[in-house]
Amino acid sequence: MTDEMIGHYEMIDALEAAIKASTPEKRAALRDTIDAWSSGPMADDFFWATSPRAPALLHTLMIAVDLAANDDEDKKSRVVHLRSRRPEGSA
Image 1 (cartoon, rainbow, N blue to C red):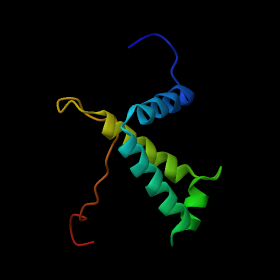
Image 2 (cartoon, rainbow, N blue to C red; image 1 turned 120 degrees about the vertical axis):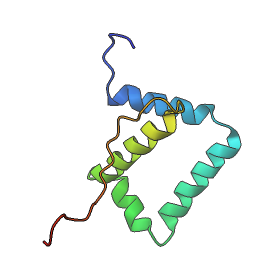
Image 3 (cartoon, rainbow, N blue to C red; image 1 turned 180 degrees about the horizontal axis):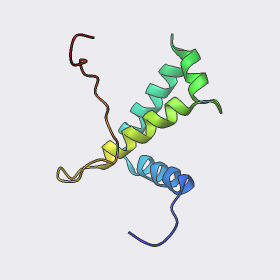
């Protein structure tokens, strides 16, 4: 870790660099998935998710990136996963 301030612009730059460094086949698969999403039956979701009002997509993206970048099994993700549980008692 450095003392340098890291924000969302640096995060996006790192994500872009990782995608560009992946194989052409993996980039094509990502591109095809995005194209299929934007032209398929869920196209409305795609255009909402890429709009300025898309906090749910950002949340999901941040979780996916954090989990995918975590290749060390001993290192825990910073993402908190909530699990539903049955209420105790006779409620």
